[in-house]
Image (cartoon, rainbow, N blue to C red; front, side, top):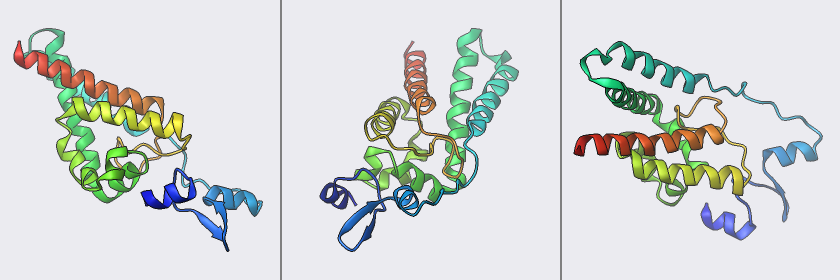
Length: 182
């Protein structure tokens, strides 16, 4: 796939050809045929809000056994990561398909997409790599993709919120690391 993209100078696949002429992707073909492409559902941040809101409520409700705001923060971070991993593992195929569209490491090494939900505890490195991948896909390659952060079958747009989620993973992992060593 990567060789095909380089050969044709494109950022995404599949590509449509008419003889030797490259038309482009689905949207390009629809424009050429004067057809308005149908969206498969409205895009929404609902899944993300549900995950983080539920994690926060559970952390606050169960925070009495931990001392101070860092105890609630630690619990919130752990719950959020666990909920996100759970959503990814509910439909691993959909997660990998969506994730591969923008994650650089999964594009280079497909097994990373299989391991990612299981490795979410390694949040610092994964958050940095994920933030880089999202910025490249959205700001450099100008791709309009769905985010795989809440599984693979939601219509959550890939963008600033996705970068924020990845940077939160870095902060959460760093806070947990510093809390464990202190």
